[in-house]
Image 1 (cartoon, each protein chain N blue to C red):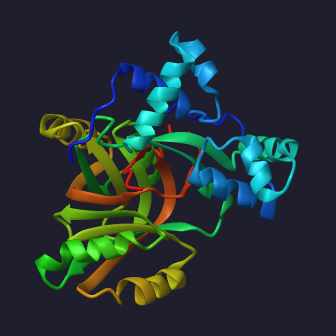
Image 2: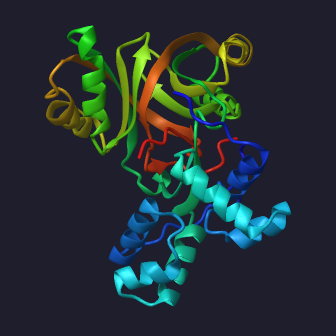
Length: 165
Length: 155
């Protein structure tokens, strides 16, 4: 799942109102034709095409398909607090990020050292994920899970677009 | 919670679209060896059934003063959990809202600029919701991964 490798680190670009307007329209409908965007914003189609390319090439924005967790076959979602020992939280976080079912990884300050969000197909898969893969990751001391009974929303607008692995 | 699962052709189309959704139906069709009409119909159906959503995602790394905040919310009475969660889901700034079993009643996740911003957000947007008893927040220091291809599609 980690096929999003950004091999080079592109320079930050300055965004103007046109860029933000294009992002807003593509957020609402990622497959909106360039011509329709141009008409909406009162600019040429060539401008829109060039702006989108610039946003993509600078790794500022991507237009992608987002799959519903359940449609993808995952019936369980958990938020797990991870306590780390004898290793840096960053190193443990990187190892955890390499596991496809671990879809969000944050190094935090507090009771736990890392917070992760994971998905599992069913209870058997979840048991394997927690007791083998997560607990077996070097540096993981304790896992404190909470099971999501209902996810009302999981659509962050801002995410890191770098390869986690 | 009974959504159709994607079949193999759906999954192949989605795999292509999750890398770059601006690719044409014709090109996907060529790569997968199916007709353009099949790709168009499949994409349309998956979108209509809210199995996928095609959208722009933007890079958090561009915003240096941004940290992820995990907000755990405890409600006054258990029968208020749903209502509080629904109210939270209405808040645009929250990227995740889940009713949880264990740790606390509800988990909400948002992006904040700093501790002051988090305190202000809690005070003005979360604590004012009827039924919220207390909150406990954790601020992220390093956002290592978020696979944006996984989501809960609701709208």
